[in-house]
Each structure stands twice: as C-alpha cells, then as structure tokens.
Image (cartoon, rainbow, N blue to C red; front, side, top):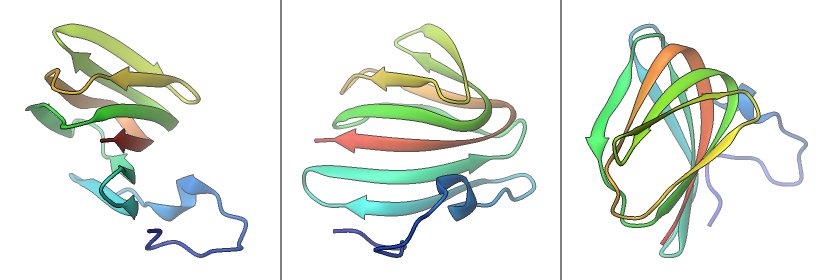
Length: 107
C-alpha cells in the first residue's frame, strides 16, 4: 500500500518532494483501489489544466500559495489550508508562487 516512503521513520512531507524549475513534480505515497496519496511541488507559473477526478480529492497545502478553480469557483490556499474538490467536478491548479501540497483522493 505505501510506497516511495520509509516506514517507522519520522518524516517531513515537504522534504519528500523537491522543486524543479519549470515543472510540476509528484511523488506517490499510497495507491490502491480505495485511495491515493500524492505529494506535489509546483514551480511558480506551472499548472495542471482543468480535469475531473473519479473520487473526492482533498488538497492540503504544505508551503507556498496555490490557486485552485473548482466548478468555476476560485480558491487561493496557503500553508496549512485544506480544500475538498468533489468527485466529477472539474478543477484546475495554478502556482501563483512555488508551492507544495498533499493530495488525498478517496474512491
């Protein structure tokens, strides 16, 4: 179930995914039929275009500022804030500045 992550070790999630110039970087920590947990880093100006998910998606900002458009409504999230993006509702992500987030999708 867990992958790309050490067990029985104290970890800082922000250290598990690095920024790369001009890129969105992801690191999957959990992937199965019921859920996925992925860390992302976005360089400033990078984005994931509008798409929909087959499950409810919960984003938790680990650092920085990101703009999320969900069903046409815009949300700006900063460190420590969380947003739920409902299943089958179109959403997009834009990095106003570099940021890191944890994405948990439950199917």
